[in-house]
Length: 141
Image 1 (cartoon, rainbow, N blue to C red):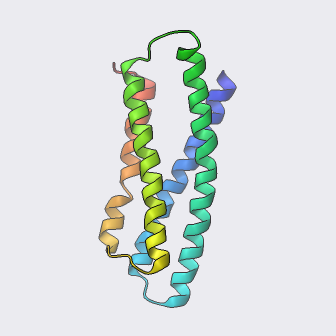
Image 2 (image 1 turned 90 degrees about the vertical axis):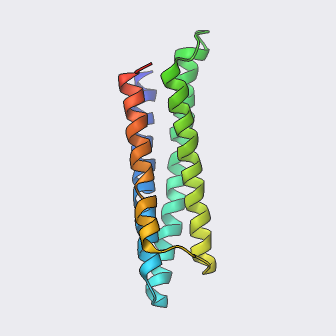
């Protein structure tokens, strides 16, 4: 079980690294006006989004496996902190998909938001990760 947990942490850290950087590319895309630079940023964003998606899959599978081993297989009730953590994980998945939707808008040239929005949008995964780590380590309820 410790190997599963270690791999889960590695994939979560990698997934979040992508979620931290992708909106920074959006900040630059929202500010950029030259076509060559925009195309380069779009290429970077597309590749990062695909790679980040590939990292999310094992992170989620391994996390589900841990829940199965620790609680469901043993017939235990899920503790309150885990319900809260899983709710936040669903929000992270939603954020990930929102990044994909925003990327598609940039690709179609229909982005209507400025760089300030993306600077704030970039803070969301930091707050989600903070809350998830606190719930998983402190287990407050």
